[in-house]
Each structure stands twice: as C-alpha cells, then as structure tokens.
Amino acid sequence: MVDEEFKALYKADPQLQALLGGAESLASLTVKDKYQIIVAYKKGGGVKGLIEDEEDEPSLIEHNGQKFKRVQIEGENEEYLMDEAGNIYDLNFQYVGQANGSDEETA
Image (cartoon, rainbow, N blue to C red):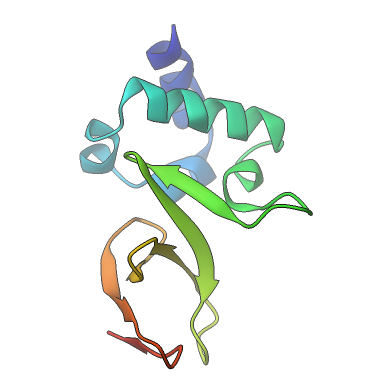
C-alpha cells in the first residue's frame, strides 16, 4: 500500500523528513502525492530524486497538485521553489514572496 511504503521511507530517511517538513505538511499530502514522491525517490536514488532534475527536463516538483520549479534568488545560497503564478516558497513550502518582472523577489 502506498501509505505504508511512504511512511517507511519517511521514517528511514532524515533528509526526506527535512525536505517534506513535519506532520502538518504530511497531513496535506494525498495518496497521489505520496505515490509521486515514492516514484521520484526510488528513481533518483533517494532525496536527490525529488530535488534534482533530469538533464533534458526543467527542475519540477509536484506538491498538493501544484507544480513548483527550483529557483535560486540572487545573492542567496539557498534554493527556493516557485509556483506557476510566480509565488516563491522555501523548501518546506512556506511562502517567502513573489517574483516580479525584474527577476527580484520581495520577502
């Protein structure tokens, strides 16, 4: 079952726990979300399968039915996620700001 396999992966991997966040974040995941995480996790050899992109494809992460692209804010060392509307989130899907036309984010 997807839920059981997801729980086993989550409990066994501290990096996965850090990426996906705590119980509140997990509660919002659907079975489809969990399945997609399992597939990406196994295909990519662990957490890097969730955050690294294929050579030919843009770096996309799907969470709660939304697609996010990995981005880096100029002057920042951390990576962030941007949804299709230009909203910027940290890796725990916490809202940070919004991208504007000049490629600068407001926090």
